[in-house]
Structure formats: structure tokens, C-alpha cells
Image (cartoon, rainbow, N blue to C red; front, side, top):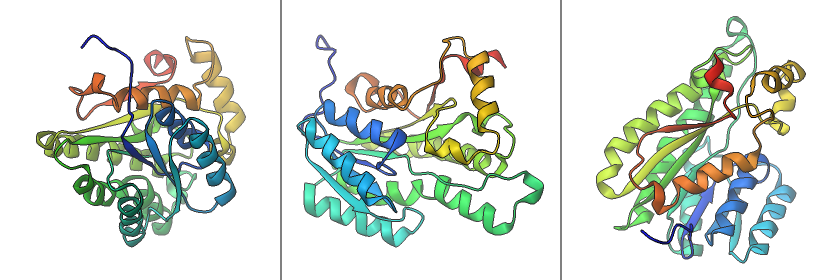
Length: 255
């Protein structure tokens, strides 16, 4: 392979939770490489439309789709809409996330099931509905995880467990789908100062500690995550299967 540029022209991608933050950055980066993008959102239609405009400004086609990815029937309808509009799907980015931030001993059964369903449970039906649209040429599936899958973080018990389950499912899907030419991986990000971080009661402390312990000297950005996602969606990564790639400026290597 002599041409090392990443060209996704003619590819169609779905980015769940694509209206802002990491999802928007991923949608923009894929569009810059030539991919058309379906932007999934739940509540923020204005933000989703802004992401669509951003994708279109890169010269790609875009479609905003409202769907609750915690609901399997919603996922089914969303994939059908993509099929009707684009005719296929080559790249699935499972980015939408939610969860309850409380100490483990304060979590209710509802808290637990909601967090697990949205962060881990949604990937399975997404893959089941999306893979048939990828055809004989195969495709790419990338899920967005976090360091809470392997580290204990205050108030992060439910979310961390859900991300650990997500990464386990990535490995099993990779083993099962690799013979079909589908690459399945995850990207795990360090602390990123997005809207989601505002819900952490210890946000300021997390940011300060991360800055102090990150060798690169800065927080990870949504664009940093998008760059790794783009790589995993490219032909350069075709032999990477079932892996979780950490992008955190070196924070996790210091213990």
C-alpha cells in the first residue's frame, strides 16, 4: 500500500449520539475523509442540525435521525431509514452514552439497568441490524468507551461496569464478525471536558488531577478521539480486531 491517505469516499457512516461533543467531532472527521454520515440524536435537534451542516460543509451528505438507541425498535427504524436514504451502511460508530453518577451503594435497580442498557446493551442490536447492510465488502464498527472500564473512579460504578461490558462485547463481536470482513474495535478516552463532564460532581477535581498526571500536558479533546476512530475505520487498520485503543495523552500509564 503506497498511498497512506485515508479516503472514505463512497462510504456511509452512522454516528450515534452525533449531535455534539465526541460524536460531532467523529462525524466531522469521517466527512473530511469523504464519508456520508447519518447523525443520530435523541433530544437536541438544533445541535443535530448543526452537525449535519458541519458534515455538509466538508462536501459529504448528511442525515439527522432522531432515535432512542436504548430502544431496540427505535434502532430498527433508524437502520431502515439509513437503508432507504443511503442504500447501505459501511461504518457504525456506537458513541451515544448516558448513566447515573452515584456511589455504588446508592444505586437503585433502575439506575443500574438504565446505564447498562444505554452504554452496553445498545451495541448488540445496533450490530445485528447494521451488519446486514454492510454487504460482502464488510465494514467497520467502533464503540466509544472510557478508562472507567478498568479503573475505579468516584461515582462511576454503574458507568464503569457498563463500559467494561461494552469492551467485552467488542471482543466477542470481533471474533464472530471478522470472517465476514467486519472489523470491530473500541476507543477509550481519557478525561475530556465536554458537556457530559459537567454532570460529574467532582468535575473540577477530575480536570485538575488529569492535567497534573497527563504526560502530554493537556486534556484529551474530542478531535483526538475522532482521529483514532478515523484510523480504525480506514484500510490501514484492517488487521486490528477486538481491541480497545486508549487515547489519553499517557494518563493511564502512570497508574
